Image (cartoon, rainbow, N blue to C red):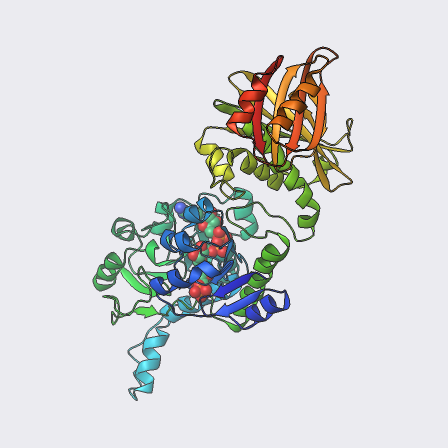
Length: 525
Ligand SMILES: NC(=O)C1=CN([C@@H]2O[C@H](COP(=O)(O)OP(=O)(O)OC[C@H]3O[C@@H](n4cnc5c(N)ncnc54)[C@H](O)[C@@H]3O)[C@@H](O)[C@H]2O)C=CC1
Ligand SMILES: O=C(O)C(=O)COP(=O)(O)O
């Protein structure tokens, strides 16, 4: 039974779903990295929010880990390249808390406009300072949106309802989408110059880190109010403090900080500064949504191989997964076969799906071929890291589909381009379930690829099979299955034999010494 660790506070629905779906679950929150390292080895899945940092070091100790599930959106606390390199799928729940977070940004905008936290504290202290607090209206003000994705889009919608004008900076925002959202697409400099309020809604990446730097804060309209419900690293906090002190920035509300938990910050106590402890996603509704979603996605993956909302794997629905499973086994075997049979560098690998195979989700099939192929070069190759490894090795990957059936109702062909030219192998599924190779470098041969095998290319001549059988018998090697294919009578023939023991160098030398043998290789599947 797969086992999952929930390491951050999560709605109890998550654990309930895991158990209902046959996944064992431990909920242990608040552990230090060292404690997590000590325990992570026993888990197949890790369910987190933003507190657990899934570092390369933790992943190095996660010997059984297959999936990290983020009950939320931001995954900057997960080392995704390290997870991919280890073959760990990373998934998030991209929509479950977006409305809630957008509402928090709007709440903070009101808090700044009317100084609500300070007015509340003063009133409850018995001061009744009616003349101290003078707010501003939101109506007709310009809201500058940095990042116009899911959350930014909801914020824009709510802001337009408040009769604000919304301008947006997002390099990936299309003009059509901007029109649909009712926002004006602008450059960052234009946004900084025009906005009365600025709200951030981008992920934390190398391109967004410090996007509100000292230099950019200096370009803002004097008295601008800034809201950040995205990630701490987006704003230079020291520059923000200086700008609040000088009055360049009229108010700032941060839900997120460069270092969290933020128990101490020069910003604390600054007039017109409002803060919340990373509460953007903290509503009952959002937490139930993300808990249910992450548990369902992780259970689907661990129990049936379905992949949803993964950041380092193509999607594969729980319904598709069982249908694709025999195809993935075939794809992996074909990849492995070409990998074992080709030497030298590979410039291109093409995966051609024909007939029924062409109607399937191709991405997982392509990744399975690549994984099988690359595993002949490195033990660490798997479906998650295969595309990255292929790219690193300069291998071009091509995908071709032909829905029309050829000789077979369903066929996968894997071709590789080497210095010696293009070579291909093809396979089908018998009874839609059992993988069989049907063509090897242009020669028709029907064989199952399983366990240790001997591959021989020889000149087709009478008596050869008898001599080969004798050589194997003398070496004490038992033959399981025997498959023969040839281009034409008396031409080149291919033999694929499954044997009970791995093929030794000694045996290969004996086979190579037989008259007419051109190639002899040991394979394993
Ligand atoms: N405070 C909290 O509790 C929460 C914070 N978040 C944060 O909010 C972020 C945004 O979430 P979503 O809107 O769902 O993500 P999203 O992926 O839908 O939108 C992000 C947008 O940022 C844009 N973007 C990327 N690079 C940019 C750049 N250099 N300059 C300007 N725009 C850029 C993208 O094109 C995209 O449209 C998350 O990545 C997460 O870090 C999300 C949920 C809760
Ligand atoms: O979903 C996100 O990106 C968030 O930042 C929410 O964080 P949390 O799950 O509340 O720790």
